[in-house]
Image (cartoon, rainbow, N blue to C red):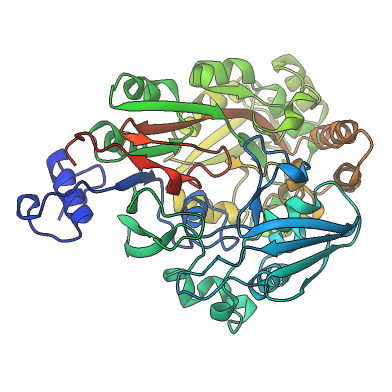
Length: 549
């Protein structure tokens, strides 16, 4: 049978979704009339690991944010050092014993979806487990300044730190959300992400796991016993749609209710012209960049034969006209960035500016490193080897698809041959994770704090998120100073970003606007740049007549 994800006729999609909303496969007219309070959200991939800290992929994080709760979360301004502005969730309050100790009081009303109370045992288990490098090198790195996590009774947790620094509360609550110890503490650390729990997670949040139709959808069901209040919608359908055109079609034909992505103008135009839809835009934490692999493909013990030279990396950066590229593709829906920072990141305003495009300087720099066009074919070479590199990117990302060819042409003008390698999303992700690329066209949603740069840009991140083996001890030292700074932190962060820029580990291109498309029948809608659907339980659905579905 033809898949309904953007391929089946519109009517077929609506009939199938109507059947899903009523929970049976009988024709819609055979059902008792009922105004279903379900919200369908378009995702770009299937949430196969919808558990906090088990996966950082967007679809998994989106699903996990509906099923689980953190102890507390940032305010909407994403102020990581403003302890009094954090919003209490599983923890109803917290206090300081001293500069190295935080004490959390858990809300005694909180329950796991199987009815078991959320207790200090769950928090201690979760934070302790993810400080273990056998579980996750990345989270062990992020939690490296936590010295101890202990229980003081069933509803009090004491977190101790190795040193005083401004983001202690952020580190304690943001990176790892509590998981049910009574279900997971018997699972060996190395097997957590493959445990049966992952396929039917039991959380503490407003929605419970319902069912999965592989490759098609995930259904989440409202938790009527949610201790912060009964959700305003009965169900959430996460629709799995890989193709960008099909994603937009589901919004335009009335099938889906909500969609969040980084869009380009020709995608946005039909959405804003539809009176049944509204577009919400806000600064994002996203950034698009060309990541240079500094190790040889196939042998990570050796340097990359071309890109291990920072002068070559700098020349490539000088060959790209970033402002014109971003303006021509994104219009007003993205801005040029000078480092790994999104529009919503506070350090963007203090980061040093990167040099603009200078093709002549790029060619001179390459010539100084021995790269010259000796055979007149327009491509520089060295020792008979042309400067030829492969640029890998996922074909499902329209922003990257739209900018790849212009980048290729800009670099051809300075004598660099770029072979475009357009891949299916999962294949691209696997190859990137294994470091199988020359240049990777990356697009990431960063942490609200610049201290998260330790994951992908420090020596300590190698083996985890640092897939390109970026390693500069000078940057690591500057990063450590900035994270711990209490006197003029902006100065320290400006210094750290400048050190990173000087080694040119990547060409930082753009930060897109976060675009959230919503059906107008949704009410009391609030979204966040870090977790767009986390407040969906507070939404309601207008009972007025709705589009056919």
